[in-house]
Image 1 (tube, rainbow, N blue to C red):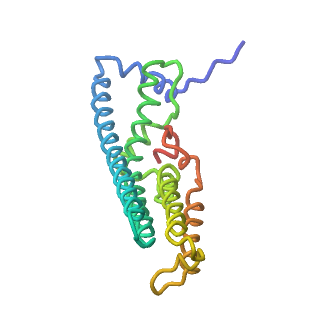
Image 2: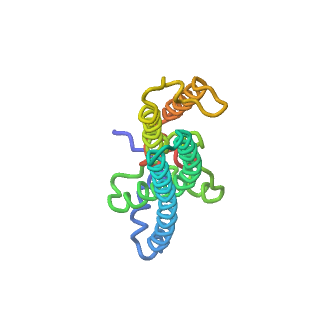
Image 3: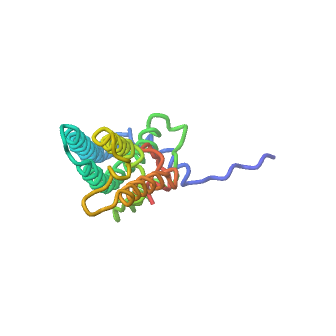
Amino acid sequence: MAEESEFDPEADEQKEIGREMVDESTGLGSVAAHLYRGEMERTVGWRDRLDTTTNWAVTVMSAIVAYAFSGEVSHAVILAGIMMGTVFLFIEARRFRDYDMWRSRVRVLQENLFANALDPSQGVEHDAWRAELSRDYREPSPKISYRGAFSHRLRRVYLPLLGVMGLAWIFHLWAFNPDDPFLESAALPGINGVLVVGIVGGYYAVLVVLAVPLSSKERGESGGADHGDIE
């Protein structure tokens, strides 16, 4: 006689959560809808903050480059623009951590609740998602490190921007001082050109290193409902 399949109450309960959501007698569907709408509003709000920071960075850095090439302006102006871009990067990395916290909750609900409601036969992505989401509501915390957020925004937005600024700086030195050696053209009042070039080169080398992601979480925005999102 064939062995009877083991009964797993927790697994069965997880499969039924999708049916419960659309069952008017439980009221779960109404609660979930309000919860999801609230989380989406917060996510969109923080997404707008990210976009605002990026727009300001592009505007300020573009204006600085335009001013630097408008006449006999010192190349130090472009270096100041690079510093400004770095400041915006730090601000955006902090905002991305907050955005990612709300985005992660939305993905947990989408993957485990709404997807299961549409097709309960497929089950859920992560069996302990409700316990983990409950713990996250009780004790909210960022789901990505500051270094990870910094790397993500650097790779996605600021490395190309700062790279253009670096090329603009090199071109400015060549265009406005065509007869002078490059290292002499890079000099600033009281600072040797070799030192300036070394500092700038070291700065970009550090950016390249920091842009390398250390985990799958840092490689993209579309993280799923895994242990890296809610923990």
